[in-house]
Length: 274
Ligand SMILES: NC(=O)C1=CN([C@@H]2O[C@H](COP(=O)(O)OP(=O)(O)OC[C@H]3O[C@@H](n4cnc5c(N)ncnc54)[C@H](OP(=O)(O)O)[C@@H]3O)[C@@H](O)[C@H]2O)C=CC1
Ligand SMILES: O=C(O)[C@@H]1CCC=N1
Image 1: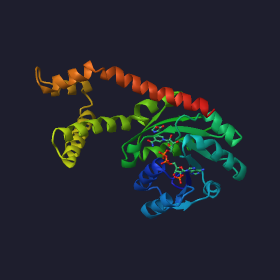
Image 2: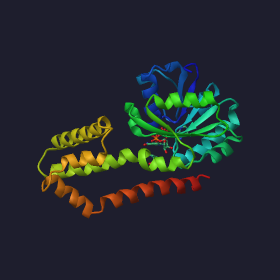
Image 3: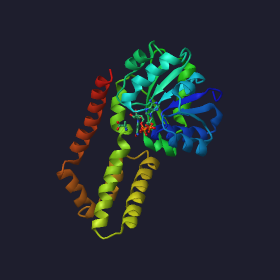
Image 4: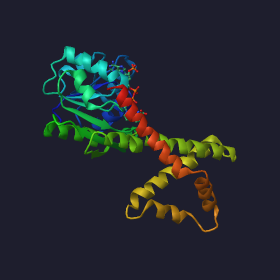
């Protein structure tokens, strides 16, 4: 498996996160190549992980077995058309991490029914704590699926999905999800500062509380999250008042609406990128 060459097209946040995980898990840096138009992020990847870098997508893909498409969604089509024109693509498998770009338009841009895997990771992948949803087109072989699984398992947990449309559901939960928690932490941090803590204290209080709460969920897997919440909530106490305020403000409905909006946006993007 580690003999396979993996090319990353686009050297931004997601590529960096996955490359960091791969190298940390012992994938040979000499078998990883990243391509990006500007040189700064490439230089950093070379220095930090020892991988091969190039500003030429075609050169990166020519030797690759697995090609990770990690550009913004609107660049997927032109990048695939460029590769189709200039690289012999038979026997190569594509992993697209782009939100809102379905397999069919990727295959259309590549000019044939290429093996394509949709993958929806998230940014905690850079710590090895990611979640990746994966869906493989019918053309993907078992060894290609295994290689893609190895790739993403190096940065977190992998969930193979039954239908491509489940990727849009997963984006709303775990793809965009880190930002929901960051937004909540930002709001808590702002109030902590308003209460008189300095910014460093406010951040320390909020981040350790978030980390502790998440770790409690992880370690108490036999308990419902609602039970952990109830354990904090003394009758007639402070937490109860805060939670009542959340409920009166419609927090559960708001979360429902926000996640639905993320899913709807993924579907709309897929129509634009069809
Ligand atoms: N960020 C996230 O939380 C998640 C992102 N995704 C998906 O991952 C993809 C990448 O996102 P992210 O890494 O955050 O984005 P970034 O903007 O960090 O990275 C995209 C990179 O693509 C490069 N690029 C632009 N045009 C080309 C091209 N023609 N050929 C090769 N490289 C090119 C850019 O280079 P330059 O800067 O030099 O222009 C940039 O470095 C998106 O499609 C997004 O939907 C999926 C899950 C989570
Ligand atoms: O916001 C986005 O579109 C991407 C996909 C999931 C996280 N970031």
